[in-house]
Amino acid sequence: MNNTVVTRPLHSKPLKHKVAQFVWVVPTAILAYKFLTFPAPSIFHSQFSAAFHQSFEGGFLIPEFRDWHDFWTMVGSNHDMMRGKAQLDFTAPFYAGIGYSVAAWVGRRTNLNQKDSEKVKNWEDSRFESRR
Image 1 (tube, one colour):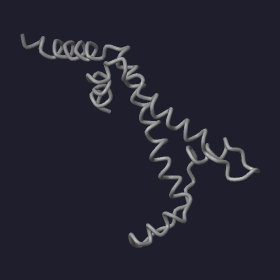
Image 2 (tube, one colour):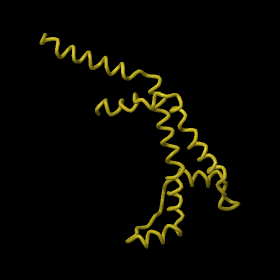
Image 3 (spheres, helix red, strand yellow):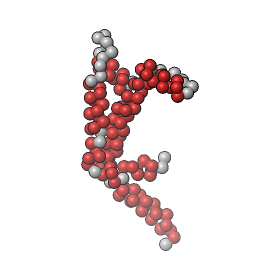
């Protein structure tokens, strides 16, 4: 894998700000609110397991559709489609915020620009030293 693809995002300017490490807070707060206020489907199911299923579990049963009319007919009647939409709206930003914050944390604590520059300089010196 190309090293630039991995390291380039870690030393970009936006990730150097301290506040970038806390991008996860807002999506986490929203997901926590949705998780805590999710109603239990019945008195026999715990609210926690129902909220966890709604927010994190997979196993979607979504039938195929032939046209947009079939699609929109299924949206209202298929609970898994609504659950998938909820995960897209609330869980996906949570994951993205965590990933961005981890990258910001790593970027602030490592000096990848200097390390990359030193590696390139050493490579150039070894490569072009014989031509001098």
